[in-house]
Image (cartoon, rainbow, N blue to C red):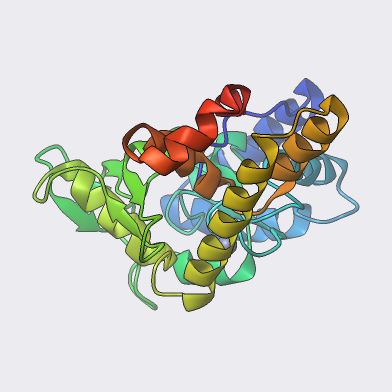
Length: 264
Ligand SMILES: [Zn+2]
């Protein structure tokens, strides 16, 4: 999982989203706002809605590879996912920066789950149970790492030598450790065996491409090699290879013959 960034949603569609948001915000009570957020999002998030067609196109452009999910990088992204769930945060149901493009399995796992960190540093699960009263969640920052605003790899380390699983970078007991653990768990980044296997396969492919690229002198073939690396799946694996090469002699040697790839 890598940082996604702002993207470039055209102003006309940003304005339209702001207009849609006003429709929700003007409701008198919080329960009415939640209800409006759900029904209005459902009715506007359609192919024939020009703004949502633009939202989907821009989100697709921000995805890696052939529109891979922004969370797992594995399956096709086809659901506009709210980082802060619309059930809990109707005030950002139409906020561009609250959108990610996710696959069904990731979106299904996260669903309405949300944990916030309050002013004392405590993690509070604000997920609303079925049939519970519709009241605003406790205030706080998100426990889940937000790839639109943060670089998940500042929190997560990918083991490229044995397990191909993510682990928190920070020390046990720190807030960053808890956030990384929560993110790994809620998105199932390690417990879906097909994701772990796909990262291992991606590593072998990147490694093979890098080994071939280094000794190649023909500019055209180097260009093809570079494109093959750029198009390979699971770009987080590549990102981690670049980070870890400084303390992994074999990788450092491969990159020493292709230093330009460190910027890619
Ligand atoms: Zn996914």
